[in-house]
Length: 193
Image 1 (cartoon, helix red, strand yellow):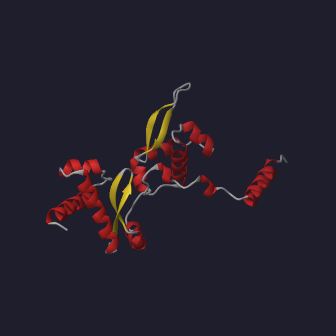
Image 2 (cartoon, one colour):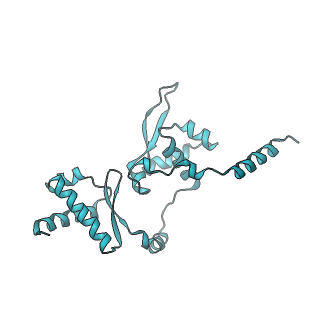
Image 3 (spheres, helix red, strand yellow):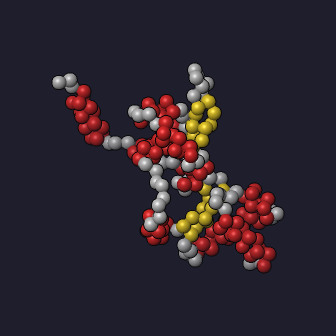
């Protein structure tokens, strides 16, 4: 590898270490004044080196750019470290609401409440404050309710390149036996005594 190519690679690597969000190729070109092909080659070189040397981190393409992530093999150690700090985690209600927004976006608060069966205003506000969702406009109906969708931060947090990488909902559907049992339980609880 030429000295110049190694220098470009090292500069780009340093950018990945300090960036708190994915860096896309055009941004890297802008910062480094290096051509697109050279930047792409440097990114490929870095990713290959990290894989070949089995480093504690990986370079991944997410949310329209590239970012360093810890290697999944070391997750138990990272989890132990993180759990030793006081971090706010998403509640079950927040995860449910975030899932609805991710799969149904753009979606209104009323749509979310209809799916969850409870008012979700507080949870929506929490997700907005954490930057996982955003306002995407207004619905063209009476009252023009706000439409919500996921953000780039959502993609980063869940390690997705785009919303298209969400697993199909069919994977979470109950099988016929479970469905039959749910229907029986609902019928029996609907009987007025």
